[in-house]
Image (cartoon, rainbow, N blue to C red; front, side, top):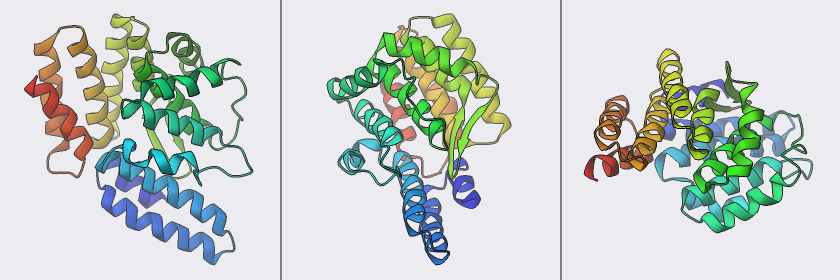
Length: 244
């Protein structure tokens, strides 16, 4: 699982897919096939996000094996994120509003919590759900010095999510500060995957604000981080900004 997560951090999603299958076999051989399926699915999902985008797995997430014990909390969050990333904003917003009724206070404090909080945060930001973004900003702020991680998942610096949520709330100076911090932290952990992703979040924020030169400069830095790695979705995002 550590090797799988390392491959994802370092921008080798195809290698992570192979390791995800090894993880499944290892758990099965030790009498935990359901847990193996869960961790395999998590690895494959993270790899798919880099190679082809989450929009391609919306159907799978509707009946996801990512959750156990009958609690589809993280799977619902990931479905909302996949919908938001693929432009299905109305459906994503419906899921977010459904969960935000209780202020996201019913998220179980278990191993899936980092996945759930990060996915809900990013989905809320992408969908422009300001009420949810405000609630989630306050939740994520307590982790501001941390990076989000759980079994087989590395989800990047919390600063990135605070940047996305600040941007969604129109707090652009705060967003710039958080995005800059995320860039520094992702550089420190030497993750081209997350460095590029955070830079592109920032570039798209600048682009929406009409700051085209700054957006292109950030997109260029992201492409430098990507190099020839199999980070297809991030490369496409960067190219769209540079061609705009």
